Image (cartoon, rainbow, N blue to C red):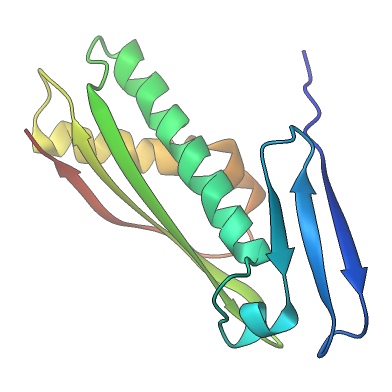
Length: 142
């Protein structure tokens, strides 16, 4: 079954002096967006890339959890970070993932292998296939 996820964006003014909001269709959040936040960094506003990072972190954590569970070693905990980089004039230039996991019955090498496979198989990774995706760290803890 195909599920449709929605969001809505609202913008007022020109790019350089305007501002807007983006609202998740689930009702779970509405976020201020500005060009300054996107191109130079600005406290209190989000960016499309921050929303991509959230999507990538959550998708990767689900893909890795699914793979580990299928191996008979479900994780006790996964802490995933995603950093999506943007450069004005070039666009999205990279997504960098990190993961720390507590997975009983698994060694570091196997954890790193499962993490690398989840990075490649995650649907958001596949959607971002036009940019380099790096797994910068996959550390088994505990």
